[in-house]
Image (cartoon, rainbow, N blue to C red; front, top):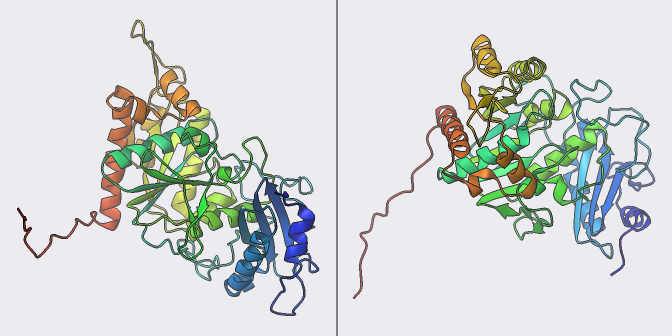
Length: 409
């Protein structure tokens, strides 16, 4: 099979025209990024944000065009907003540096780009005046974000084990990797070689599953060692595409593993997704707690409820002698939660088994479900489930049949 190239992708897109003037989107320099990973292709199309809601047909036409290219098995096309009248980004592969504007894990807002949608909406979920409205997530009962003010505090490991804990408590659970720049869930869930498949349901994609949880990540579509060097609007467009075009089915809860910091993606999620509540993960050390406070206050500013703080790597207990050592201090998150007036959900120790489980795609909830660490996650998950019930109402129980069971002998 012939592998797709940038040239063959552009040739296919050359036949896609802007409905306003009938000109090719290639000739108009609307192609902001093309990322080719074997048979999987992702394309970003830059549009005026005010035109976004009317360009879904264009996006679908472009996606069909890319899908028609020989060698392409999975095509994703997302609309990413440009300022009205602003300069268009040059045509270049999404995996190439963009004039030095690589966002990575930003701790601040990028004022060069307004929070962008993938082309939908005119009203915000939580921040009036932003010109956004929440995405329609269908039959997803609740959405919780697992966030941190800084990287390296074990946020993704926490998100994975909380999702599995919720599933073990009888909830139907999805897990979304919103860390576009550093996706890790495919590895953590033992799905490094998995690929999403197209479903017959409205052209959506069927997410891979592991341990009873549906998972979606940009990591399924790019090589594990390939950097994603996209501008903020491109990353947000890709994230919205993952949310909107995934066939999640009916979920009690969608757990979203957020990128660290308080940048564009966090703001976009708060504006575009009806978030039920946020969970903040931090280590006990002062510098981590300082950033955790910033993350918590960001969610407060956009009116997202805070379900509570988790103290990760809270202590280390020697498996041989039982001695407890507070490597990163201890109790800081509990104290911060009290000062900020939010619940303290619990503490998770620093333990080799948790780290190995994450690296090997074997979460501790699955390998040692009755162990002390799994019970700590389970206790936190019960509090989150209760908070969800308080916000959106208890999970509906299956209706009893009006007809008695009849046994045939």
